[in-house]
Length: 138
Image 1: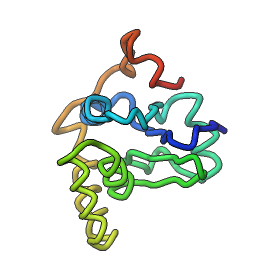
Image 2: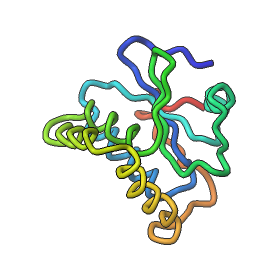
Image 3: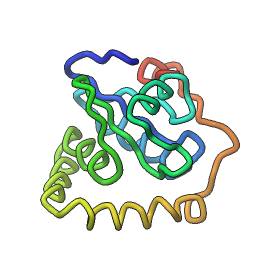
């Protein structure tokens, strides 16, 4: 399984989803502390994490956040914990963690279930530029 430095976190995302791709680009742009690395749910790096946490990728419409302490966050919790690490004022979104998870995840699931219809789907995962390649694990 992937080993992360104490200050790194790994974002696992759907590599063929346009909304997910845009979200990754947004995170990269606002990750001034250089906290996040990325891998697709379809990639080799994700396989042992997915297996270890018994994630069914056929049923998971979620961004995942894997931490150095081997914690895995899903859905709205992952998104809000990512936001907490980004620059101000984006980090203020983490205040929504006080809302019960079942409410947050209901909204998250609604968006996730409609993401391909609303934002489209790619034929293949994005290929990072040379400058960003260091942030992506295969």
